[in-house]
Amino acid sequence: MWKLGRAYLTDVLRGQLLCGLTPVPLQFCTRHITCTLRHLSTYKHGASPWGKAVYLKNDYLRKVSSLINFLRCAHLHITPTMAKSKFEYVKSFEADDSCLPNTWIVVRVDGKNFHRFSDSHNFIKPNDDRSLGLMTKAAQSVMEEFKGDITLAYGQSDEYSFVFRKHTTTYSRRSSKLMTNIASLFASSFVFYWPRYFHSLQLQYPPSFDGRVIVYPSEQNLRDYLSWRQADCHINNLYNTCFWKLIQEHDLTPAQSQEKLKGTLSSDKNELLFREFNINYNNLPEIHRKGTVLIMKKEDVASERHRSGPGSSPKDRRKQSSRLHILQLHCDIIGSQFWQEHPEILSDTKR
Ligand SMILES: Nc1nc2c(ncn2[C@@H]2O[C@H](COP(=O)(O)OP(=O)(O)OP(=O)(O)O)[C@@H](O)[C@H]2O)c(=O)[nH]1
Ligand SMILES: [Mg+2]
Image (cartoon, rainbow, N blue to C red; front, side):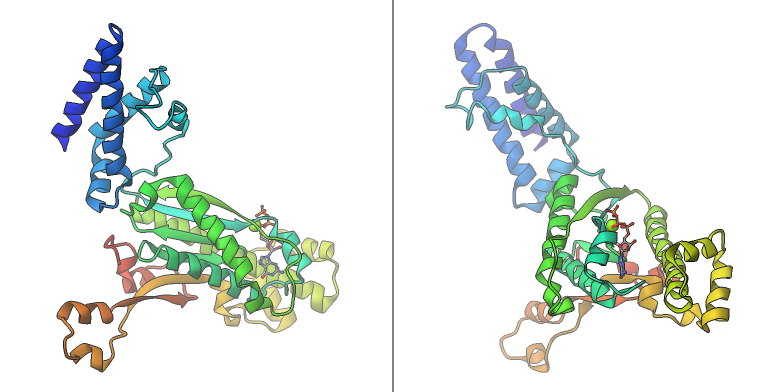
């Protein structure tokens, strides 16, 4: 592989050297550039995971690729007969946005202006279980699509975060491909499954979701990210529960309710809920306090017949007995217990 790359580089350089002298070596040069590109592209986009891994890891090949892009940009006149078209060089202007290797890729989607969207669709305040259920259904569609590659998803309010396994090679780790595919599949699933959760309530307008990609180099960073999102869920839920109780049951205006809660600590809000509304915050539904965690779990689905059926090989039996399914939890992910119980989330084996 290494030798092959080096041989092509030598040819390309030789061709470049000669192309200033006569038109014939120019053809020589372009033929080799085209050839090299085809090989690189095979390794980069090929079906073989080995090829992809080699492409990702082989710094040398990346340099060859950059050199070729440089030659193209420098207006080497690649003729239409040699390359696909003389316009193809414009592809080299595309930014290389592949995520850093050996990091956890997180894609977070967030509803665009859901303050307005929730008002337009009369969402129950502060938490609408129809909306939470629909968000989770859309997240499950995404996890199904990237089966075995997304190990955990965490959602609350109008957002969902998807964690890819550390060494994923999906879309060659290209940030824009990952982000746009997830955001668009999430949005289309949200619309597709809308009637299942909102029944006869019509969608007033098409919702949309923004997306972002963040890479985390250490387990601690990744866990801190998820802790941050869950803490955000708790802080907002505690505030919103107090805010809406004061409006709904004490007839305060939104401005008065806001004023009453200004500067209060978490303990003050817990106290207010207990004293004025006889609510123990810790007894409120976990889905509202902790959000939703989705993880991939292996499920034993083999029937007795499959396990010992005539003609079934041990491989068949293994296949039949380990189907992946999505487990939905509403638990704490800030402490260590969750991570001790599900070590496979951070281990990198493709599931
Ligand atoms: N009533 C109600 N509102 C919700 C629910 N879930 C989300 N929302 C609304 O969605 C908003 C989400 O917050 P943000 O994502 O920060 O705000 P946004 O309006 O979506 O604005 P951008 O994300 O910046 O476009 C909340 O402030 C609520 O207004 C719900 O279950 N019930
Ligand atoms: Mg939003």
